Length: 202
Image 1 (cartoon, rainbow, N blue to C red):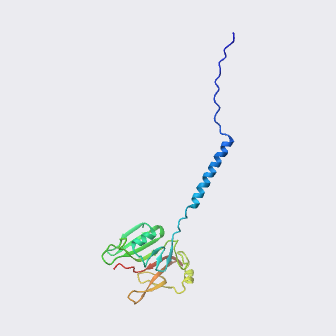
Image 2: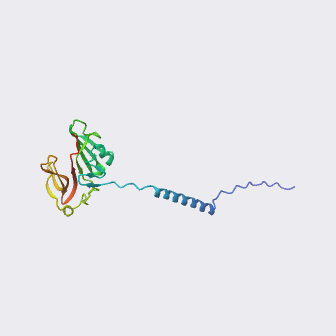
Image 3: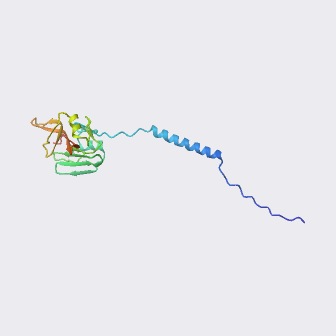
């Protein structure tokens, strides 16, 4: 009589990837990264912020004399970090990330903090990224200031402060002058620029 030997069921072999499949996967990943890189290269580079003070005409892309409104400033600099009505006729607006504070006013009884009714009066520009159109930057030494602005003089600004008059303007009445662009200094270095212009608001 022949003995009955039970058959052992063979387990299926595990599904092991071959070297060939590894190579294909690597090629697919390389192609994907290449396509992503090409797509990134095709995107336009972000525009660099305009941080040049051009006399009392422009602060960055903000055209002080042609659109000196609070709305124009916000179009140029984005959302402000602080806006305070300092009196019935005046408003102070700050862009902290730019080291920029601008004073607006309205003498006609309309809101000085309004987009269309707040008019430029003055700006204090202390961010280290700012420079003038002539090349003087916040942080530069006074020696460089005097080289770039040979006609500059240090004097009272007529508004309770003092500094280097870089651009001199005549008052609208025709009598007297004021600094359209002034540089404040401390310990022999430029600490801020001040721009002044009466942009309207009567």
